[in-house]
Structures are given as C-alpha cells and as structure tokens.
Length: 402
Image (cartoon, rainbow, N blue to C red; front, top):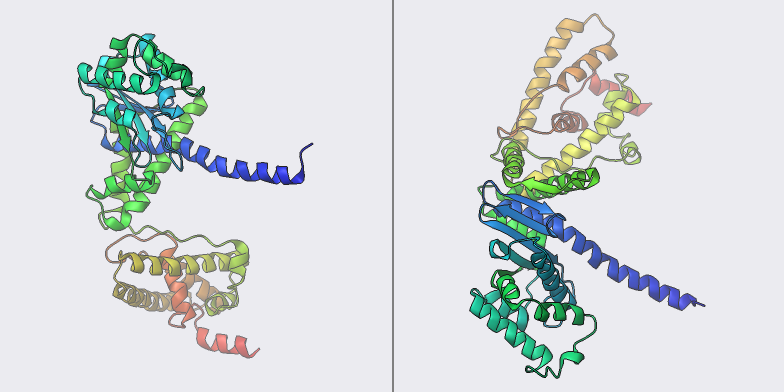
C-alpha cells in the first residue's frame, strides 16, 4: 500500500519531469520558427512530418531531431537520445525513406552540449572521415575487433540502437555520418529567435513583440494542420509574407503598440469614485459607459509609462498631445453650445463627450490604440482641465458638498 509520504514523493517527481517534457514539445515549434527565419526562398519547413522538424529546398532535405537539455546531456557518448536518433535515421535510410546523399541529419540541442562521439561525427565531412569516426566509436564501446570484448557491457537502454548503428551496411552509415551535424543553442531558444530578429532592420523596442507574434502564428498554423489531419508544412515565402506584414504594421514608427492589460470588472469598480467618473455622473452616462471609461483611463496611463520607459515616445510628446486634446475640447465645446443650447445641460454634456471620444490624434506622428485618446481625455477630466457638463466645475462642487 502506498504511504502518504510516497504519494508526496511521486507528486514531486511528476512536477520535476513535466516541465522538461513540455519544454521538449515546445522546442519543436521554436526550432521550426528558427528554420523559417533562415530558410532560403522557395523552401518548405515542417513539424512532425518528415521528422521532429524538417526543411526541404532545392538542395535536398534537412531532418532535425530537437533535444531540450535542462539537466542531462542528450548527446553524451552513452546518451540514449543520441543513439536512438542515429538508429532511427539508419532505419529510415535503409527503407528508402530518404536519400542520405541529399539529406542533412541534424541534432539540435537547446544549449551548448558536446561528446567525444558526436563531435567526431559532426566533424566528419568525407566518407573516409566518417568511417574513421565510426570505427573509433565502435572500438571505444565494443573493444577491438573481432573479439569485441566490451560488447556485452553496453548499457541495456542503448544496446539495441548501438547494434543497429554498427551492424548496418557501413557504407550507408558512413553516408549518414558524413551529412550529420550538431547544432547547439545558447540555452534560451527564445533568446536565439530574438538574436536573429535583431540582425534584421527592426526597431529594437519592437523585437519582443514581433517575436511573440510570429511564434504564435507558427504554432497556430501547425496546430491547425495537425487538427485537420494534414501535414504541418509551412512555406518559407508564405511565412515571410506574414512576418513582413506584421513588421510593417507595428514598426517603422507608424503604430504604437499597446501592451496594457484590460482591467477586470471588479478592478474597474474600484475607480468609480474618481473625478473623471463623477464628470460622467453629472451628464447621466450609464454604468457601462463609466466602466469603459475607467478601462480606457487605466490602459492609457499604462501605455504612457510603458512607451516612455521603452524609449518609443519622448515624454514631452505627451504634454503636446494633452495641449492638442484641450484645444480640440475647447473648439468642440463652443460648437456644442451653438448646436445644442436648447437641450437640457446633461444632454449637451453627452453630445460634447461623444464628440471628444471620436477625436483622432496621433502621438509623434504615430497611430495610437483605440482606447488611448479617450483615456487621455479622462486624465484631463480627472485634473479638471476639461469637462463635459457646461458648468462642470460648479456641478462637481455641488456634488461633493452633497
């Protein structure tokens, strides 16, 4: 019977294993994106089709086995992941599933990793060098031929794969090793993606946002293919169309991207006592209008801070914008007085408020998110620099006294 202590131990073990497994699955998406960014025109990249990840172009095929490496080294001399991968490639080539002469066989490890065998295999660029590397590995693991005195001592978890490697047609294995490569990441595949983007003509402040977007698009496209039961293949040219369009959308200093979180309803309710909300009270705006105003106000305030910290906007530009909005408000207030003077004062205020909420103003000649200008108006209303009721200052004093 399992004791409570053992149950706790099992639970802890599962927690330590699951992140590594999740990282391994997620790594395939990241490696696929890495390929798409660097692949030549006209090529196609895939996931879980030809291999974990693969690239096809006019030169041939690249098959990639991706390995995360949180703790263990997946390409150590006696590592099961390496020997299993080599065995699987040998089986594929022997069955006619690929042409080893036109195939690059790559093991990708998310962090720097090495081993005596894998380094020798990766360095072998000719059939003769590949055969020599294979012979050295066999001698190290099995001992000298023909006795192979250490053959029985090979660990059971890798023995079948090692047998396949050394027992298959040596010319075929040498072809695979000749075309074998080891690629290692920095330890952070996401940072490696950003490093590639930094080499492109993109504003540095936009790198992370663009990386988030293209990571999401690639994952979505792959998932849609897998859900539909069709090969998860993405054309390099198609990908660069999405990528380029998004860069043009948010970069080149034409659009300011909001990273502000929309507040939940309960959070918004906590701001209802604010002055700018009371300004809406005195012109009889609805409760939902007030919550929307609070959301715009909070998100605009967050955007101002974020853009200034990132260097996307010079802080003095916010002062210029506020002056522009105040000038808009003043002109619209006059027009409202002329057009709606016969209406009740609350309705006059509603008309002015609606008109100001539609003001379209840029910030440093850049387009702003939909919530930003309304949120800036609410900040001005909070500071009593603008108001909606024709006599908003006295109305607020009366409301406060009551």
